[in-house]
Image (cartoon, rainbow, N blue to C red; front, side, top):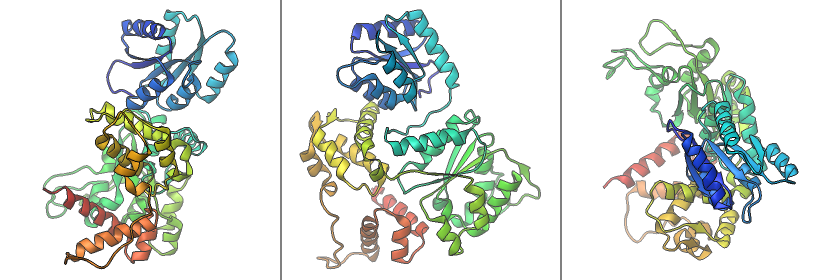
Length: 443
């Protein structure tokens, strides 16, 4: 949803004059309006910049209004316009999540009033950028909306790159805390010696380098939601302190002699088998029970292949909307079929990276499967073997990085499984990946 003060709307009708007439009336009422003359154009506009409200015709020649409802209902309030005799279709649109419907010929003043009501009922909440119409992802979104009403901890499980933080955002946006802050922190990325300070804050002089009082993320998230990603990598000693915070709703800053109350909802995320980590003595069972009040599992991309084409088009539209220097406007059916057939070990994050590469390197308005083979060959072939023989001597770190990358490929990007094979902690792999990216970015 737009962050501008003026509400935004997309008006969709294959009769462009009609779309412009409706949009003009809304502009007069203070809205920022865009028009789309087809369902396909509407999907691109919604993906590029989700509006507050979508007003769409139902019957269109390429992609009908029901598909527009499916694509927009989680980011926008959708009002459908129906012709005489299409009431059954309008009811189906409402069942799929449309906010309201009006019969043609529409009265513009009534449509403006409906748009205002739709905006008011949404309450200005932030919206999730989760894209997909598959049953698997719709179940996740339905669960997120249900759990949002109960102010209890949530544990979001799923492989790396599936969008666990987006699900946490969706829960926050649908909750009574939507007007409060949403703060996310990756537990695996925090240096072990600073985890407590990052979470709970510290006082001046609490340790070397603490030159001033500092508020931790619990304080920063007061009145809102705190997302603790990769909770399985949190040190045991900090787990005990986190458990007390969840039980007592108060924190003690490092170096402080008293606690202070916090009003924060905690959502945790993990790609690990926490039950196994409990058995291994690396995660507290009482903390797991406290966090796992309402579990939500985010499916891997290979489990929701029906969403791959829609996601690819969404990421392409977003790349173009952000001013990316690209001439690519669309993907051919055979390219989308190739994307659907790939295993996506890196999940949605990997798909987004591939689409960005295609958009940047592509040289035609429409890319096909041949372009995919040329620009992203790893998607159409088997993973390369790890070779120990070298033509030249290289640093040990380079060989280690290549072997780790190969093991991660063989494990479908499952960091826990790869760490078990390599005999290291999953947090070590995370830090190695961060270090490798940093070195590559250095001039």
